[in-house]
Length: 120
Image (tube, rainbow, N blue to C red):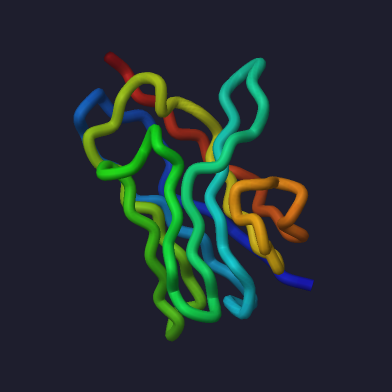
């Protein structure tokens, strides 16, 4: 069983930056970030494979968000730059043997989520 704890959410203005952290009890999985806005389905944001460090991004965040990991701290980060109001959502960290990193069904463990609100 993997425990995930997110932190770093908050209220920011458009074009500001924010860094989310996900402290994990183990990083021997593919780690992903997803987000869910009110009334919307949970959607893929970014992922990083444990085996080779390859990263993946949704088109909507490519070039603005960066996922990274610190193996010594068992922590995965999501650096979010040039934030937009449409980035407002609850952000979730996830872990799993995700062959297809963009699908929520391929992740076995989830954090409790952290709210990110971007004002215009």
